[in-house]
Amino acid sequence: MKTYFTKKNREGYYFVLPSLIFMLALVGFPIVYNFVLSFNNTDVITIGQHSEKFVGLQNYIDLFKISTMRTSIINTIVFTAGSIILQFVLGFALALLFNKNFRLAKPIRGILLISWMVPVTVTALLSKFMLSSSGGIINEILLNLHFISKPLDFLVSLNMAMPSVIGINVWIGIPFNMILLTTGLSNIPVSYYEAAEVDGANAFVRFFKITLPLMKASMLSVIVLGVIYTFKVFDLIFVSTGGGPVDATEVMSTYAYRLSFTQYSFSKGAAVANILFLMLFAVGLIYIRMVGKDEVME
Amino acid sequence: MNESKKENEMTLNIVSIIVAVIMLFPIYWMISCSFKTDADIFAKVPTLLPVHWTFDAYVSQVAGGSTIFRSFFNSIIIALSTMLLSCVLAIPGAYGLARFRMKGSRIFIMLFLVTQMLPATLILTPLYLIFNKLNLIDTYFAPILADMTIGIPFVILILRTYFLSLPKELEDSAKIDGCNTFTSFLKIMMPISTPGIIMCAVFSFLFAWGDLAYSLTFVSSENMRSMTAGIYNFIGKYGIQWNCIMAYGTVITIPVIVIFVFLQKYIVSGLTTGAIKG
Image (cartoon, rainbow over all chains, first blue to last red):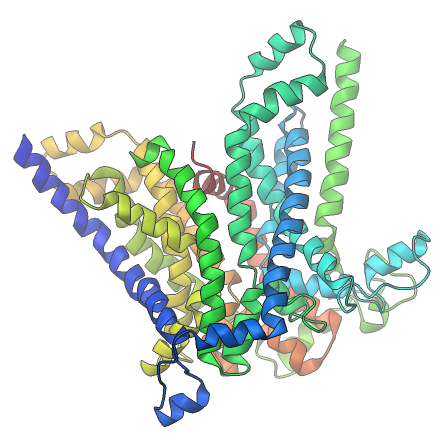
């Protein structure tokens, strides 16, 4: 019996190794290489002259002297916090709505996912069009309803650019939050609510005493996953504002990209990406601990 | 009682329709404007439907020497190859992690979890330099290989959960009938896992289809470009011709909508098993 198991288990490696090796080569190695890069002074000139050399933490020190670097960290946090709070609250509200039993609940809940599935590049361009100050439909609607007297510069004004990109991201994120939270809601036995109703608990009490406590696990994982996905935002901002105006929406991903592929300071770009990675990793640890507790992990 | 229940149902239906209209309006607007003339787009009073229906925006993409067909073809090649290769590597991987107790299983799962969380920008610079050395820049391989790194961990994690939910007895009885581990995987497990496999194929396709960072960075020549990189460059090249951009966007989005319409249940279950565990 014992030999049967060892033989069988060794066979498992044949199944796992190909994908594992692929990932180590295309992700593992690049991560290590990225760390090495960030300690060198590799840019388009030093690469050409083969004169790259180790400079220690110099890139990191230099970066923190640049205001864009500090702004991009703050922007990333603001963008993430704003997006998560709004899409979670709205997604939760919709999850509660679609968890009710009515004819259109299922079909509409499904259709809403489309806004999450549209390639972000398209979403970003579409928002740019709709939020445009010359003839953009959002401005037209607001003008016609007399909410505003002249068109707003959503994506191009210093103060409005960040709230605008957050708004776009919320539009993408709502269905995602909604679907995941609906699954959590549907796992709560209806009998709990019925019993509470018999005991005279009103909807408000039922929500706070039954729904919220039982949803704790799924709420937490939706939020943590959301933070991870939102923190690394790239496409949306890169396409809709390009980080502008004047760094107003520059996040760490777009800044890393700009350093590496506009200024060709590969080492600096790598350093920014590394800082992003380390920050994400901290959040990731929470997620891994959560999943690790799961019985599926065995 | 019955009367008020009916009324309640009515209200809920109406509210959910309003929600859907608001949420989906941007997509409707994109498609509608792609059929408008430039003048109509900037009309004083925008109309819900085009006043003068026109395919100009689509025609000009083809006629104007713009390479939309070519880009569509490139995107299809990149997304299909990514899908196929991701599945070939990830399905056995998920099966191995679900069915065998190996030294290191736990660590492997952790590794896939971690890679799933990584930002594209983290490996963008090193991969660019590596691909550059290997002369892979400006080939299909570069975006395909990079896109696979998004698809594989996702697929492995959801398919593993899926395999765990299938009864083990099936393989045991296949073994008695003389199958070895590999033949029982291919002949017994694969056929009954079709829903899980479709789920994985869909997601790895969509990840690659929507990717911008990799295809923009690793591909520079115009005739090798994917659609997302194409539409991004389109703005730089032709300025803001909104009806053309909306037409381009519609072409990118239609495959996604078609996939969604036919494979909705796989997408929803993939999302929920992929993200929430327990």
